[in-house]
Each structure stands twice: as C-alpha cells, then as structure tokens.
Image (cartoon, rainbow, N blue to C red; front, side, top):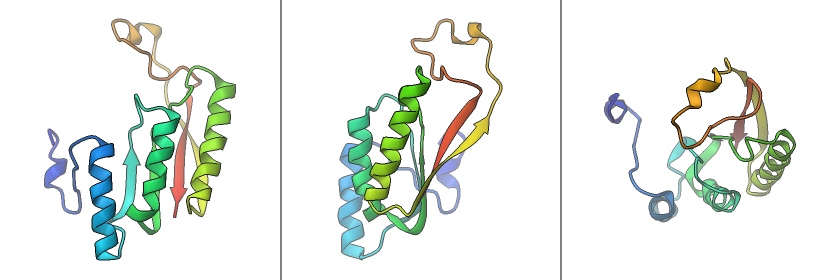
Length: 138
C-alpha cells in the first residue's frame, strides 16, 4: 500500500493470514462458479512445507484456467541437495493438484557481501547466485 499498489487497476490486496482469508475466497469462488484470480504469488517466508502444501490444495479453486502461480522458493535454502529434493516434491504435489506445468526458472542475481546480513536475525538465501523461480500453470 505504501507504494500505491492498492490503487492500481486489477490489484486486490487481501490483508490477514492466508489460513483465515483463503477459505472465504474459496467459498466465494464456488458460489460464483469461477476462480477469481489469473495469477497468485505466495510469500512463503516463515511457512513450512506442510503449510505450503495446504495452501496448494486451495489454488485450483482460486486460479483461473491457464492461471499462473509462483511462490518464494526458500525451503532448505541452506542446503543445495535438500532444496532440490523439496522443489521436486513440491512440483509433483502441484501437478497432483491439477497444475499442467511446473518449472523452475533460473534467475541470476548479485551475491551480496557477507556484512549485508550483519544485524539480521536470519540470512534469507544461502545458495548460489542463482535463484530457482517457480513458474506454475493451471
């Protein structure tokens, strides 16, 4: 809202915990007989795999046909092997929930100097300078 996103056409900001807000949206979508969104982004920071999987079960009711979904892919961001294992498990989970395509698009970014993380409670990304952005399609 600070940057005026709430004033842009076609943008709807839903305040609250997803666990509280999304069941209401699913009920409204069922009543209207059409999913309300053509795209969804989920910031999964501080969410675990179980919460992410619960969120994914709601997406088919919320995303229009050919809708696009992405999320912050930070699970096991400290371990390359585990990160890839989780990414594949989540990919299979999304496909079983009705997505037609799930890909991880490499996005390069400059690696910050270690002092950038000084004074923070947690480093947000430990792996290389290559982030695997999820691109998921209904």
